Length: 180
Image (cartoon, rainbow, N blue to C red; front, side, top):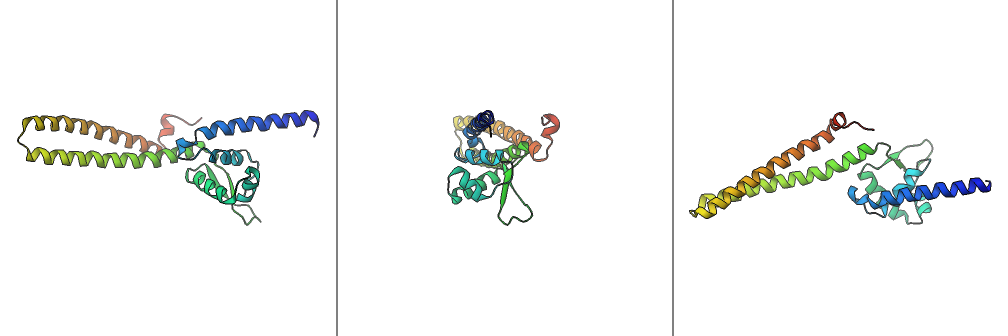
């Protein structure tokens, strides 16, 4: 390698490291610890699928840490296991469809939150109605009425958010906002 090529290679590695560092800062949006971002960057820039041993060697981390990290990235659809003829160990590569990764994480996180919040709204309604049926205090009835209106607004919001989630689940979102 000539001196010019060596310098260009160093510049390339620096550019890759900067990108990986920036991606790592935002891994928490995917429910992934920032330290796993380095692993993702390594797999992302690898020209060939990698084994856990190769990742461990590249990053100087234990194979157990690599396994835990790859599982988290796989759960977020950021990496996928691939097969190569003649290779017995599991190989991983970065998922090329970032939209798929985002959609999976968005849907999984928000679906749970929406479902839990809709249950909370329903429980609030039930409790308020039970209190309303028992009380003769007009002030309490008025407060319950206001709270029931708030619960209705919350219910409508979570219903709407559920519809947004459905757009991601069924891929309709890409008709509204096309992939680039």
